[in-house]
Length: 279
Image (tube, rainbow, N blue to C red; front, side):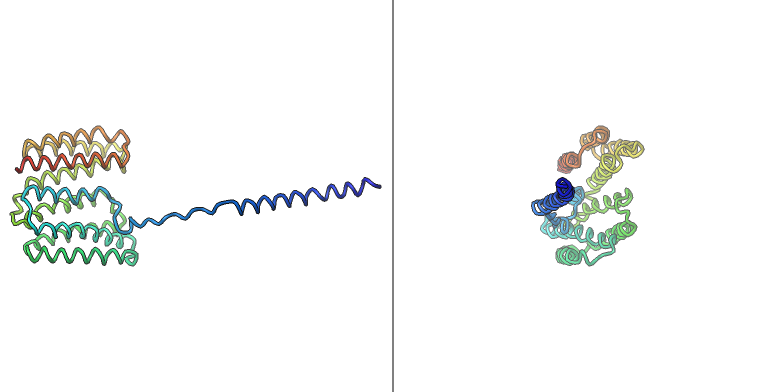
């Protein structure tokens, strides 16, 4: 008789103790577990496009034009209009691609105002630059079609952008009071360089391991070497380096950082050779 109540108390007490222990542990965990840290918002990408290679395509042809024809004050607002126009076009095409222009309204207003102010200054000094407007309008229209189709990273769209970037060379020449034909040779070698650069970068990132694209890149670099040497023999030196780069680096699986370093070295080599040839 005396053991039965003790059994009842023992069997009924264990579940209660276990439940209390579990509740206490859960409460302690909920109290002591740190709240997940809030991720910082990426504000830099809201104003500066995350396209590092585009800056080389903007600045190298502009610098090549300055090297070839010399400096004039008009080329300073031209640089501002050139950079502002790129930033404006990037966010305008982003609005077309996402179909949400309201999200980039502030960028469009800021960069549109900067580009318009600098552009008007340049055109008042060199109104003949309006002759280039249809070419850049056609490029922007093609970029817009690719953006609307969400194919802005297509190779054809990249080639159109390369042509647009290189077109700033004759613009720089006219802004400096020179004939656009004075930069015909630098224009050609710069166009060849950036077309090859576009193919090289694709073989190292988006098309890495694609033998067909690698073969196209190597054939183009070989032809570019021959064409550059025909323009002026000293160009054979950097273009030989570009061909070696296109053949050796893609299989090595380089990170974007090292690809960027290789592009910086190549761009400097091109500009130095342009300076030697045009001096």
